[in-house]
Amino acid sequence: MNTCDVIYEGKAKKMYRTEDESIVLVEYLDQVTALNGARKDEMVGKAELNNTISSFIFTWLKKNGIENHFVSKEGKTEQLIKKLEMIPLEIVLRNVAAGSFSKRFAVAQGTVLTRPIIEFYYKADELDDPFINDAHVDYFSIATEGELKSIRQLTLMLNEKLIELFDQIDLTLVDFKIEVGRTSDGKILLADEISPDTCRLWDKTSKQSLDKDVYRKKTGDLLTVYREVTNRLDALKEEN
Ligand code: C5P
Image (cartoon, rainbow, N blue to C red):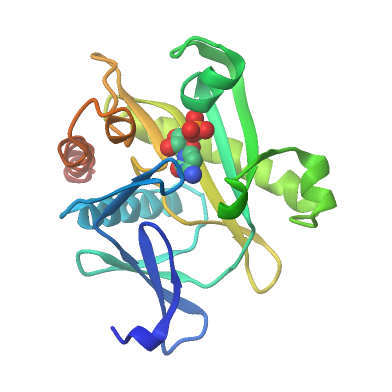
């Protein structure tokens, strides 16, 4: 890939222009970060695992009624996606208390929430992605009221579908983060990545984390647990 075609370089992904203006090539990188990039390590093989998992999930979602930006998996670490105008929000949905929710509100990790809680974070590295509400989204013209309503509906629908998927491979979907963008005709579309980098996934029996928390908390080997998620999804593919 020609470096002059790079249109974005993030912590775990690089994006390239393609001949088709409406399509972007994403390359996953062998990098893992925590604390908004303050901790960073190279992990050979992570890119392939993330690309495999995210491609599988986006394909499954498409088949199950959730439109998204995914076009095709290209090779081990790359995928083609639809170009969108990204909305600078990290949308988090929580089913079970963990992570920053447990810390911020002093709720014991593992407490099942009576209903899913959606949170918004303003995607701005220099501000450390602050926690924001609807009034901030409006004040900073991040999205319209109608768009925010669509984002909430999409996030709740996605949650139901992802719970259904992860249930089949004995994982509890504790929480997840998504990003969305606008299509050229102004529709909100699911984008970015869905993987153990962006979801908390707990084994239903052992309650062990099969996600990036093993790296954040230094409690296990990231590649081993991501491989476990990949293998479980593979088995599902063979069943269908
Ligand atoms: O850290 P926190 O509890 O707020 O994370 C909630 C969910 O969002 C977790 O699944 C985490 O993996 C994901 N997340 C993410 N990218 C961030 C922050 C959180 O994917 N920058």
